[in-house]
Length: 119
Image (cartoon, rainbow, N blue to C red; front, side):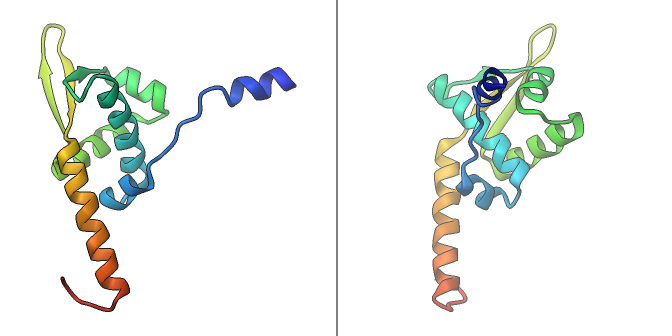
């Protein structure tokens, strides 16, 4: 029993709550957290992952991955390019855009808390 519990807790996935805020979605925030982690490990350079790898590693369904990837692209926090034969999706995390959106969200939240309509 102890070994099973240790195995279950061996690889935990964190989710950045700020990413939930800027995407307005738990699943998109979770995906962005994981892609940001990958991006950081590649020095925020381009990296590739297959849909099958992302689905398996992060327990996402096909539609769930596709819909949330589109959302992250539309926000400008990631870019995705299909390259090569066989074709692979290459990701790049836009950390500057993430910071911009996080700061904008924070200032909007503070303005709401103060009862201001805009800053």
